[in-house]
Length: 232
Image (cartoon, rainbow, N blue to C red):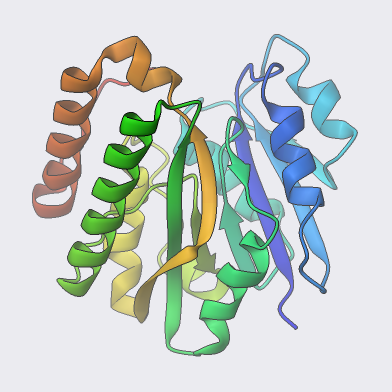
């Protein structure tokens, strides 16, 4: 059975992170799960809360989410790195289903399905169906629409490509999948589900949010030029 390291980058997430950590600890996976929180020097109680659940809490100073993801990977002992975010709730079967994709030795990365938390029925339908379509269609085209809050990477392949680019403030998930594809297969696992907060969508508004992330995805994937500004 594969050794699993779940890595959660965090910055001032005292209101959300405990529920995230509990969801990871409640997995039905039969093997050991190493839980690592990579904190960007939070000024609230994020670290104190994390220490009650995590095997390791590591600190990083760059304050990009990519740097947090790398800091967690550096401390990890697992064969497989699973990533989610500090305001995301993974389903009970998440680890087992993500790990199952790696029974194929050619698979070096996988990403699951994301569904919105606290959305109205129409919002939930639109957001969920659009993500499923984009993930399925673009994976078929080998132009993966991925998201860092539901991603798994084989540690050996991760090390070969040098991990995440810590200087990217956004688009780090698209960038690493683009690079790791050279090491093997990337698969979409639709039944490995994570429920994400839509607070940023509500704060930005749908038009701004969709335009920014759609443009950023293609700029990163095709030209290697993600946005240079994004909130920590």
